[in-house]
Image 1: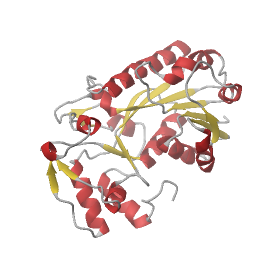
Image 2 (image 1 turned 135 degrees about the vertical axis):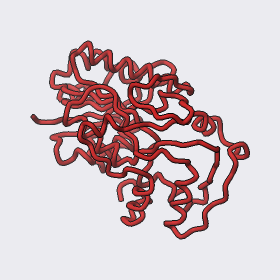
Image 3 (image 1 turned 180 degrees about the vertical axis):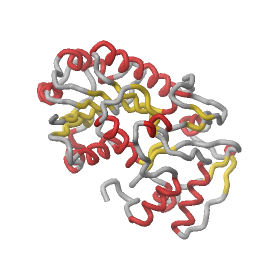
Length: 296
């Protein structure tokens, strides 16, 4: 089967997915909010289209969608709903004859706070933040579209994203790294290589349902900074108590949720993590020297 991918929201994760698929896709197209970003998409092998939501899709975008076999959505909803479904639901349902699979990139934030307990895809979702509540609604809408059309829809729940250009090394180099300590707090993370690898894997298998795409080792955030500083040969930044950290409301909201997220269902499909924990990932990026920029 000739594969043609379309990525709504070809940002950091979307560009990595495109690079992952470059050797097997006949074509890859994707959207950006600004024509000024078009060159960056081209560098990742993506034919760019400007999409800012609105009332209608452009003719060029409609044409690209009509040829798409695999649709990947990486645009966050807002208070008014999912911007892709708002304008493209009819097109997806009735004007994409080649479409065989949909992947929707969501967040493990939909689980909310579980006081450090392990959660998997069967766990109750009780999101805390408004953005995670909006994500949960959008997940249900994409799943419903799948049910209506008979298309497989994979809901891909991501944990904290990092990788080249976005990591503790960069923060240390810029003098912005802080070791904020909240006793008992742990987070899962996911390297962008595994977002790309797992999404491509699920697409190849036409998987449907919910999948946690996350690492094996939920860990305290201060430990990540400490390990990166050791690798860089820098002095480890001092501990800062959470109560004294003067975080933004969004920053504080991340610390309002504590859970350990299982990736067992993803692994059961045959996917093997490229970076199973932050230690392995940081060590690989440092050894390869590719931590500073996205495309290096």
